Structure formats: structure tokens, C-alpha cells
Length: 308
Image (cartoon, rainbow, N blue to C red; front, side, top):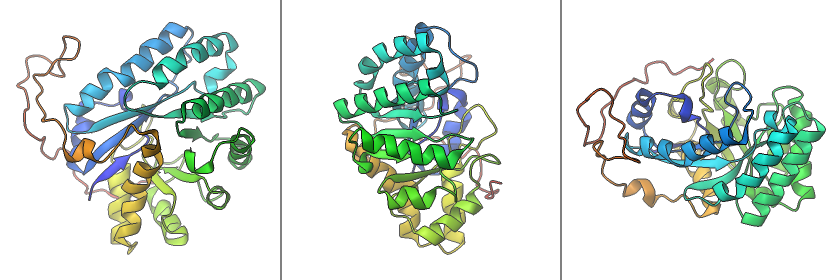
């Protein structure tokens, strides 16, 4: 079975993770623009970061057999630095129009402040203007209210719910998101968001229509194999294979495919891996390592399926 991980912050991960994901069946991933762990203080920091995820990171993934896409946005935490936010809003359109950008995101609320609301709304307008889907980050605190408010604002701005993916859902929010016609994404992020055993129960209860599974793997304690491990656990638990395929592959392709920037042929007929290839004069090889030219082999097994 092929998998798409539609929310993975690979700038924080090693090439070993790319090899493991490819070996487990991940054919494509989406890297949302996000918070680095400490606040950026200059617009120039944002420019370098966004340049990286539309440039070298895309190249690096391809050298390990995975097609890489991204979303572009001002992070909700950093919306609270008004000077920075104003500068970032000026440069977002030129990045949002780059090849392989599949949405505006991840955007939304963190503490649900007035500034977060202001820049969330401005970015929704940008998405509408560019006819791009939206990826919404729902807050860790007061999640249910923040999720409802996010959808309310999207509708106020005239967005079609079919163009909006609401991420980081849980048992408390899923019903409302589905009932209102939005895509409901779930991050299999250990301990703090959603474990995969809980995800399997949601698939049992709600089916797989408009449900998307992702790993949200980043610099925190997270697992880049969250999608294939969840798929394996779901199949072993008796969830129909078609439901697993929808939640772990097809729904992400359908939602973000509305951008016109991601299509199945990208990985069904990919360019051959040749790690001798250069990106702006540099390859992925370090320390004189021998180049890999064929598909990478399995690096990390699927022996531990449960993500708490």
C-alpha cells in the first residue's frame, strides 16, 4: 500500500527518516511552514526558512525516493509579533506561488489573540485569492472552542469547506468538523495529540470519508512512521482496506490536489534516484559517502506499531 504523510516537518528530521519512510511505503509528504521552536525575529529568517522548504528540502527528499510538497504561511505563534507578521505577510505571496506549494498553512490560532485572528483572516483571503486549499492548525489549549472558531472564520471569509483541512483533531472535535463539511486531519503525535490506537477507533466509528492521517513529525518526540504504522494497526484491527487507503493516502491527494500542484504521476513515474545530483552546487552526500543510485533498502522496521 502507498502512503502520503500530509503533515511532516522534515527540516527537523534526518535522512535516516526519509529512508525509513520510503521503505515503509511513504511515497509523498507535505511539509507545512511552522514554528522552529524559538521565535524568529527578522523577516529574513522567514525568507531563508521558506526558501529551504521549497528548495533544498524538496531536493533532499527526492534523493531518498519521496516526493516533497509544502504549504506556506505565517505561524500563529509568530502572528503575535506584529512587526514580524507585517513583514512576513508581504513576502508570502511570492512563496505561495512556487512549484509544489499545495496550500496556505499551517495557520490558525494558538492562544486565540486578536493579532492571531487578524493574520489568520488575512491569510484566508490570500488562499482565496490564489485558489489554494488551507491547512489549519488547531490550538493545543481550548481546542474545541478554537476549532469551532476556525471554521466559523473560514465560512465568514467565503471559503468552501472542501478547500479547508482542519488538523490536529481529536475525539472532542471530529464530529463537528465532519458535520460542517471540512476535511478532518489527525496528527499521530505521541502523548500530546493522538495515538494510533485511538485513531483506529475513530476510523471504526466514523469511517474514512474526509478523514486524513498524518504524523506531524518535527523536532519534538514524534514518529515519521506514524502514517504507515497506523495503517498497519488499522488493517490488523479489521478496518476495511479501502478505509485505510482513503485515510492514509487518497483523501490527502484529493484535498491538496485541488491546488493543481500534486498528482499521482509524480511518484508513479518519478525521476531516478541519483545522489550524485547537485542542488546549487551541493549534493546530499556527506564525507565522501558513496552515492546511492537505486531505491534505498529498508532501514527501520515496523515491529513496534503502537504509538501511545
